[in-house]
Image (tube, rainbow, N blue to C red; front, side, top):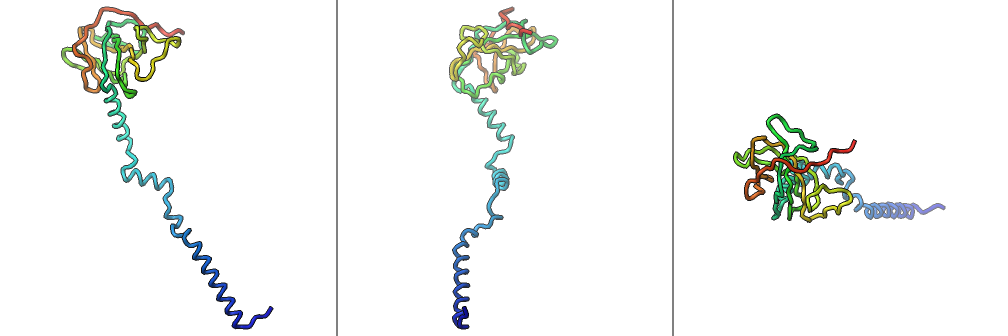
Length: 200
């Protein structure tokens, strides 16, 4: 069909106008260009640079603070302590012996860490370290087995802690993150019961 030149020009203007309107309607989708949208990688880097995502040493420090406060308002009671000669993952070095310390911890939080209980010379206050060999006991003081009721979170917990300790030192105390856990020094008996050796 042949249009009058004026009508043809008018149709062309309408078509251009319609195309322009269509582009304007779609334009809001392009207001934020894809390049400016933060990717997951950019977002993570930004958080780290702004301090919102703490570096590893801050995470470790936070964990240490939790563990240090793990005893809360609870307490540690020594039931008995003796020179130990049974099975242990520890070996006594020359001039030392193994000492078993049977303790009951009450009122602790889930962040309490038995590895962080240090054995200390009662007189000199010299620390002989933490990381004892740990065995969980029943409330009466026997080695916990699979058949025994398992301790629940928040219940008093009785454990056997085995340390390397000087042969000549008569008394000890226990520290947890710089806090003395005992009201007075505790003596060490000559002998006591022993953990069974693992079956081969």
